[in-house]
Each structure stands twice: as structure tokens, then as C-alpha cells.
Length: 387
Image 1 (tube, rainbow, N blue to C red):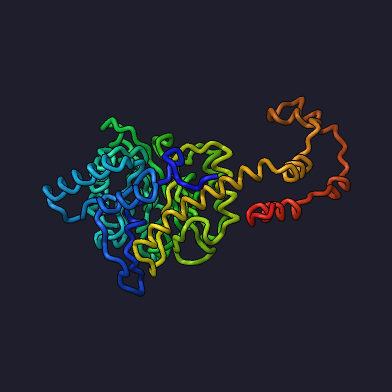
Image 2 (image 1 turned 180 degrees about the vertical axis):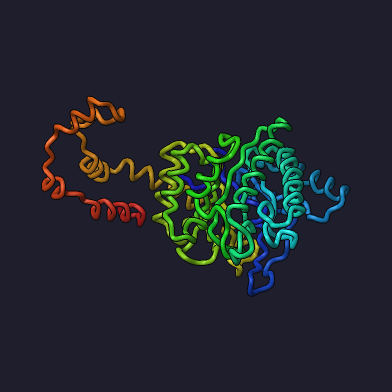
């Protein structure tokens, strides 16, 4: 199999990913900044399908009207020249000091109003270049001390903001859906909506919950020590997997944003298998960045590596599904003679009566063989290329 990316794979990167200049809290930049046009051409060179951006990745926050117009014109020309698309956009509500205590959840009503205005304008910008998904990452929506704000007030403000922006999108007639991106901490000590489960619960309280889904990220769930696969499955079964951020991350660390599959390939394998086996149709967006030690040639290797690993794991998933010994074990594990099929339709009085009359052999149930060690080792053998 060729591991070269194709448009049908829908691989995307953000301007902030390949454009990361290597700054961290303890060190100055190690790479010079590249323009959005240069980054579009870089992504086209490595075979990406699309490019995503925060408003200020593309247009500086203090740009004049004429500067904005020229930047946007040049960016659209780069898209036309390369064939790249823009499936998703978002707003930077975390870098500027105005948002030091949050944006939608700030205690200052003027900051909350400014955040709404900035997002409305950023939505207009994203839609103008074709975005269909709009992501909300609440990087500053949180606290260092809970003495500073009531979480009840903060969640209400968050809800009011998303409801307002849903109304704006509908009033403009935009073909756009929202996706909430959870994260437990960093840059705030505590961030509101820290996990996929919190985001799904929040969405259910909105005025138009059908318009809003989630954008789960590997690193963010791993930061909380959670199983990312299970979070994605919950979003999927809820009909809320609107977008996904792929990277890699060790449990319990700061937000590392490593190349996809480079730290926990087994977990990445399970994720790719879930997405591919169930027909996920959205972008495969890599929200990661190269090592601080990399130059731009190595940044290209990083981007190619994200896509290559995904395609390798897609091939491994197909191999797992076709492996006769694996499938034999799975058939044994999931054996069902249909004796309890009457429970599949949910509760009825007749089903309850029938179930009440059954005598179970509890000891036999406890003694049933479950060869999960064999199955897991077969998975490892497939991933290590010895099957």
C-alpha cells in the first residue's frame, strides 16, 4: 500500500501547527515566522488536503482594513494556486491580554461583548473562505482561584455566548456548525468544559443543540488521564463528532502536541480503526507541531509523518479486521445463540416476565474463557509487523 496522502483522506493542518515557531514558556523561538501564503504552499508540498486557522493566524489583531484586504486576497490566491481547502476556522480568544480572565466567561461585561464581536467577525472570515465547521477552544475560560468567579455564573455566560453566536450564524444564513473543544488545564489552572463528557452535557443545555458538536483532541483527553477512544466513541454515538484533533500525548503531562501516533501507537491504532470502520466523513485534522529542535525541512517531515502514520494504522486496521485468528477469537468472545434476543427491543412486560423465569448458571458464567491476552498480543504482532 502507498502511504502517500490523497485528497480523499481529508488530511488538514492549522496554520498554527506547521507555522509554530518553536517558542515555549522557557525559550525563545527557534524558527523564523512564515507567512500564511508560505504555509499554504508548504502544506501543498507535503500533500495535505486542507488548512485551518484562527482569525489572527491569518490576519494580525491590529491589522488595518487595507492590510486585512491584501492578506485575505493573497491567502485566497494561494488556496486557488494549490487547491487546498479551508474546512474549519476558529477564533483566538486567548493570546491578547484583554482575555487574561477569559473571553465569554470573563467577569468584565465589556470583555464578554468584545469576545462576541471578535468571534462574529472571525466567523465571517472563516465562511468567506469556505469553512463549514467552527471550533471553540476555551483556552482562557477558567480560573486559577475559584474565589474569583462562580462556576454557575461562568457556565451561564458560556451558554449565553454560544446561543448568541448560533443565532448570528442562522441570521446570516451561513452553512456552519460549531464544535466545542474540551481541555482540562493549560493555560489556565482549571478550564471550564474540561472533557468530552462535560462538553456533551453542556451542549444539551443550548437553545439549538443540533447545531453544536464536539472537537475532541487526543492530547487534551490524555492530559486528564482519560481514554481518548472512549471519548470519541461517546461523541460518535451522540451524533456529535463534528471534527477531531489528532496528535499524541503522554498521560498527565503538559500539552505536548506530538506527531500523531509517535508516543502511543497502540491507542492511535484503536482510534484510526474506530474512525475508518464506522465511516467517519470529517477532516482528519492534525493539531500538533514539530519538535522545537526542528528546522522547516524537519517541519515538513513532521507533517508527512502525521499523515503517513495515519495511513499505516489504517492499513493495520484492515489487516486486523481480515486476520482469521483475530476474527476467530472475536467470534468466540462475542458468541450469541440468540437466547436473549427478546431483550434487544428494550423493555416490555413480556420480556420482563420471560427474563424473570430464566435460571442462570452463575458459576459457569464466571468460568467462561475470555482469551483477551491472546487477542491483545495478536494486536501487538500486527502493529509490530510480524504477522
